[in-house]
Structures are given as C-alpha cells and as structure tokens.
Image 1 (spheres, helix red, strand yellow):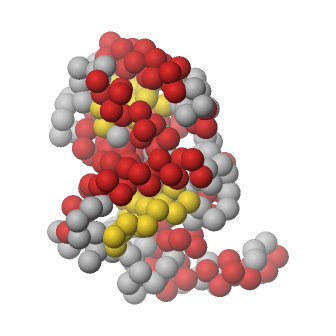
Image 2 (image 1 turned 180 degrees about the vertical axis):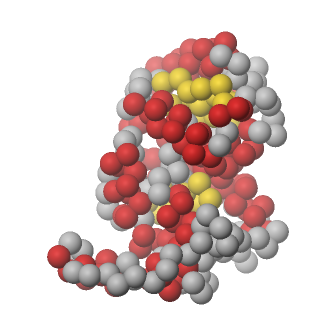
Image 3 (image 1 turned 90 degrees about the vertical axis):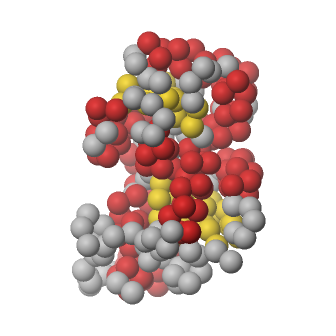
Length: 257
C-alpha cells in the first residue's frame, strides 16, 4: 500500500486541518496518507525569511528513512526550499505551486495567481520566473489579506477572490490558481462564481504526487537536483539541539542512497 506524507511547512493547526481534509479526499482507495505540520517555526509563511526558516524546520520530516513514505508533498504555495528539499529527498517530493502551475498549462493559455498579502505578489512573480513560465503567466493579484485571516473572514475572502479574479481575467488569465494552501476550503464556492477553471493547489499536488508514484517515477539526481556532496558540519552544537545535530547530517546519506 503506497504511503504519502503531506507536509504543511507552517505551524498553523487550522490550516493543517484544512489541508488534511483535502488530502484524505485525494488519497483514498489503496493509499495511506499522513499530514503533518512543521514541528516548529512560523505560523504562516509570508516572506523570504519565513520560507527559509520553514525549510530548516521541515528537515526532520523530510529526512526520514526512504521506506517510511513513497512520496512527499510540500503543501505551501510558495514551494519554500523546494530545490534544497528535492536534492536531499530519497522519494518523489513535489510542491503544490509547481504541481498546480504544471496542471494549469494543460487547461489554458495563461494562468493567474490569487495571492494573500501585497508582498506575496513579488514572491509569486519570482517563483514563476524561477520555474521559467513567464510566457504563460498573466500575473498575480493580491487579496491584501493575511493568510490566517481567510477563515476568520470567509465572506470577505470570497468576495475579494472574485474581485481579484476579474482583474486577472482582464490581464489575460484563463486559468486561476489559488495562491495559498489556506484557500483550499474556498475552492468549491469560488469555482461556482467563475467561468474559468480554478485550481486548488493542495488537490493538484496530491493528485500529481499519486501519478508520479503510481508510474514508479522518482526525482532525477543527475542535474539540477544532484544530491549534495558530503560536507563536514562544524560546531552544530552552537546553534542546534541534539535532535537537529543528529538530523542535519542525514541529508547527505539520505540523498545518496
């Protein structure tokens, strides 16, 4: 029976529960699915600093023996630390943003992203450039809301999603991506008001991870995700707990198995 690990790299219990509901709906049948949030770190990820801090915080979850899980999903739309995590993962590991953008390419000419804070627009622009998809990108529109306020103000969130979607449509988008895992609970109501496809990145990530594992594929460590060469890690005790001192060196052995 294949086993999936879905990681929420922030520490919000509410967002983790929403991700879990979507994940368990996608990983039915002969799949087992475990959903975990980062054991420590930011409650929401809304900046580069948040992203990099969260990358370190999820290492205990990613660096498990490869037989523990058959695939890993990183359930944050910023795909924080995705390149580093792919380098060291012994099993397929994908991010929900790269999954949803890949799916969007099959459905329309240009996709648009519905982001949270205004700051997130620059983060989304940078991510799309990194993935080389500028030609298929209509842009991002900000809800101008903090991630953790979506559930606290559901009607405002939905109304703002619709308004932002209309602006993206005017910019040429014909596929919409919800730019935060915390919006997964809004996808059905939002889709009802839209005449174009709306992609829930959590569901897209779960279903594409299933496809990768079921096709017996794995990450290529022959190019951009080449496993890191062994390094001497000095003075870890100056910064890290005993647990992390034992975990950090595993990146080298895990990736090269």
